[in-house]
Image 1 (spheres, helix red, strand yellow):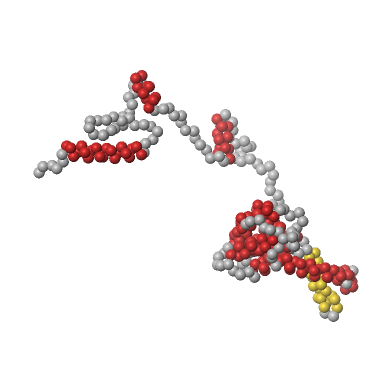
Image 2: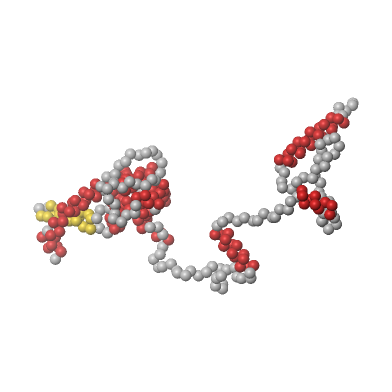
Length: 299
């Protein structure tokens, strides 16, 4: 049986394959050029290595042509990430190259001795601001501290990303408070200012039977800073619980809490009315401090 292949067909198929190989090679070409040579009627081309002498150098006749075809390129410098870790590592290597010790520590110690040891009452749990830690504990339910911490992180992030509040002149904040447009830059100060501004200065203590006839005697009593903040946070939580739910999810409570804090700064919260009521009762009950029953008890 005669073969169906012919020399002209073989040459044609070889030409087509060679062209496809060349097109693929041109797309993947790098900086090094190819040395091409044509053979016969076909477009077959192959890459050739430049001739070299016994010592690996080019002949004088090919030196000029090779320098024109292949320009000399300097090696690409090694790049390092611009951070302090790489800078410190390079500094250590330079010390070793100069014959110095890599670790400038005392003999026998891998790391240097601390200049100041932690105090007796310095604990890792107290690394957060006092107000932040107190509010987080008040947000905790059923002993789930991790959930309260997630809610507090959401609240601080909401305050940080929210727009600057508009302070109402009818509800002034604490004297010396930072400008309103700078509050989102420091969410911890934002939260502290809202709580301290709405915290009551005193509480009404009811003493049963002291007024005579079985009536209670109401006496105003000042509170410490931690007590004042606790009452303010409880008032804010009461206002948050009265709000309508915005949907399911564990972040809905934190979202409502953050909005209520912004409302406190802007003077729109109902907590301001509770604070004003307590102060009015305290002002009216100042006369009870000189009650005969109370003076006799003090003696």
